[in-house]
Image 1: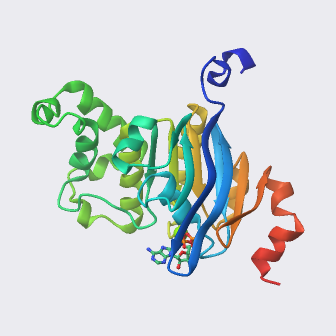
Image 2: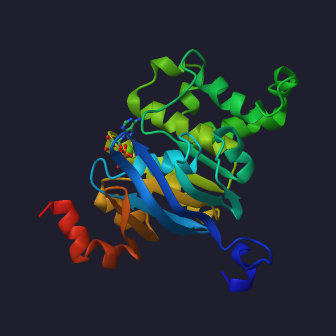
Length: 257
Ligand SMILES: Nc1ncnc2c1ncn2[C@@H]1O[C@H](COP(=O)(O)OP(=O)(O)O)[C@@H](O)[C@H]1O
Ligand SMILES: [Mg+2]
């Protein structure tokens, strides 16, 4: 792709998808995220790694407005926010998935997708869900995440891996530009793991910005254009994958020596 054809190059567009300026979150005496400043460029895949309890999920919760900031500022697609409201993040072009999957358990797989496609308009939702365009989009998403055959199952009856795939499908239904995935690969059997990798590769090819948390260094190496390493709520290292993973301070943080 030539530089001039890239969306990055269009005038007036923020060069960064996400930026944090000294953001903090405390839980009692624990500084889960501690005056953290980082920048995530538009497009491509960025992984967030770090020991357990290093603040990875808290960071995603702050970026997506699931937790309020104690201090600092989040800049999403050029919009500077000291208060990030979760319900407004899709309007800023951002959505996320949870380490502990969140679905409408009493609803079918199909309806879990359909509510996302129609929920922005409350009153016409009942009529809209019958529209061929929505039905076609729901079918495409469910095929993409490998859940078409299970479309009539209740979400509560899905396996752990199927729940993760459906949650990714719900995120895809929002059709935003920035996706945050909190441990999308954790606990998946190989076949589903490959499916999630393929979905993320396709999203990247479509020009989206993908941020994911993982402990699986093989996957981090395979998927990431760049990497962010957290330790004790602070930035330990960031940049190209191999130099960062091979740096002494990162090795030290992982081995705990
Ligand atoms: N809701 C919470 N209440 C109290 N402490 C929390 C809460 N969420 C996270 N923490 C603490 O904040 C720190 C960072 O947690 P977390 O962001 O979940 O780390 P990670 O995702 O990297 O494993 C940990 O010490 C954790 O125990
Ligand atoms: Mg976590």
